[in-house]
Length: 316
Image 1: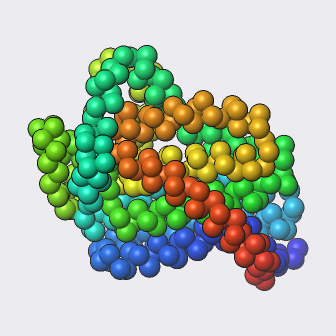
Image 2: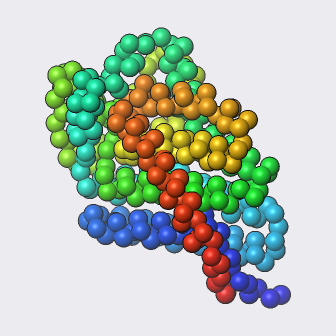
Image 3: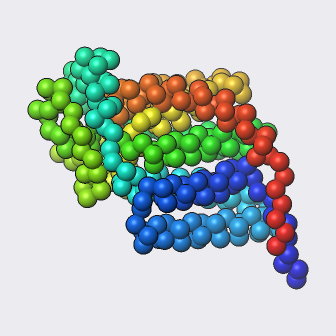
């Protein structure tokens, strides 16, 4: 049996490999300890081996299920890349004090503190947490829609989505911010109410905790808490990728004239955006930056997509 093959990579796989390289370079720049950097490097090698194996089998056997597995694998890696940003940026310092200060200057108070206080009802909290947790359903649902129903848009849609994720993750490495749920707990409610926002430096390097839930929290609140325990870290607050990615998805769906799909997404999107501040995952400036950045990433992602579509073949 001839095991040689030419490996054809998809744009999403190419951008993933590029992210592996760029994020590793940032590890060197931030002064990450060598032993921890090597651990992350070995993981990258392992991910690359699996990716190459899937590409090889798909190119050789041409089973449709293998092409789907390639996409699923690249997408699933996001659950690793996101918390990894904290493993790298924990040595840089923290910029939450600037974000809290911006909210205070722009709005005269802390929206992340006041929002839930003004609307404390359990059903409101559940509605917000439903919106927040729908983020993952929106991503998976739209990708499934394009893969099974409108495959002509799938490759472009998937690439632009992955491109946006990786731009956000690279920025999070360089600009560490944890969000109100972490920062408020560190500086204390008294400082927040006084509008005093001290620097905390590399505090989270030794205190990577998640805020506790309320004993009588509802189902969706507990669902959000579970996802935070599994993958949340004091990182990735500015801009809000929850808002940025969901806005990007909505814009892409509208661009492709899938108006029924957009109509399904919009109610969840509205509550998702509100929830990011309500549950103190983000400052309001994070949300605004998420919306603005999503528009920029949409145009840039679509512009660079043809570059990643150029055929890249590796003979093995």
